[in-house]
Length: 422
Image (tube, rainbow, N blue to C red; front, side, top):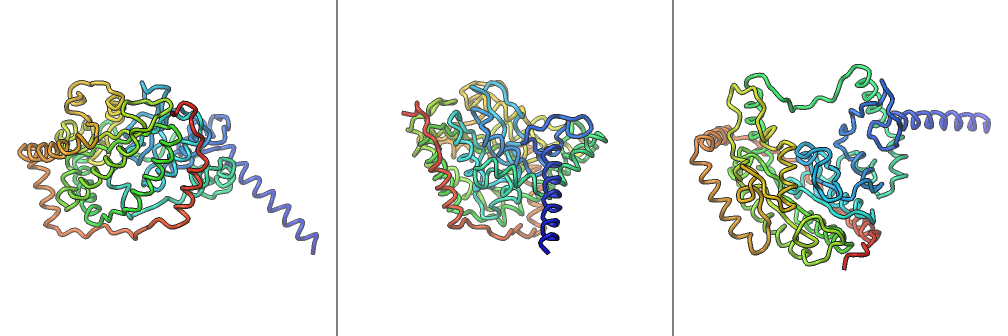
């Protein structure tokens, strides 16, 4: 009996070792340092197959950048992979479908690197609702416990990784790539349909949106810990095309939007007076910018019904193009751009002193846009959506629990303090 048990154990260990070795060699998420092999993994086409959590968490866990850029799919798709002009460089560590629970853990993971200077993080209503907490691959990645070696083991032994490995090989052999919705040119009507479907879907999302005060408190604890450690955090509220912003207002979430702006302004102001060891932007250890609210670049007309050329600024109402993200980083660094990205009409620094007039300005810009043909067209479409009586998109609520708070506190306790942080 012992002989059979020993044989079984040896065979099982050999199978697991081979399974893990295969995943580590193909390295679909680009975390093991495996060499690029033609026809196998020369193109890591599945890095974002999990939303980017495994890859981005590993990037932060190994301290691969002096600054990191965090956020949802708007960050993944709305900024260059390697933005230009940032002091010391900045890595795009965005993760699709994320929320403030994952983003807070990401901040703490990145700040464990004693050489990290700055974190730039995108925020909006989506991150602070009860509709989600973490995607499945969060628990595989180093985000879950901050341990890169354990994350290696989890990823290597995961069936999800095996599927990504097989698909990576197939992509390299056939020249295939993940299907993406963004193109340089479209068939007539495709872009317009995307705008209409996007506005219709987000209207339903906002009808079912439920803010969670604990999410804001969770983020504050992370912001407190990171800035106390001498890392500068520059937050920004994501821009949205006016079609989506109008869906937000018409769904009755206007008050929630302005309340979040006020809460974030007060939160960042509480920690702005701290010293950052090597700041990347002006304004102290915690700085907040806003690129939302019917700004000039966001009210450019939606594609015509027969348009084929890609929109110059937005993929669809929720996602902007990488050159917009690059302009946002430049603006946060104090540069004055041109045209739609000129400082007077692009981005505003939120402080207790500027909050009131910027809120008034949003109302003014909205009314001015609604008086234009483009605004009237969008308003008429949303009226049609309302008349159809759409059901709220109501996802099961996911609340933070005691373990989540304990994980945050343990991660905060491990942060090194920068020598030059006052």
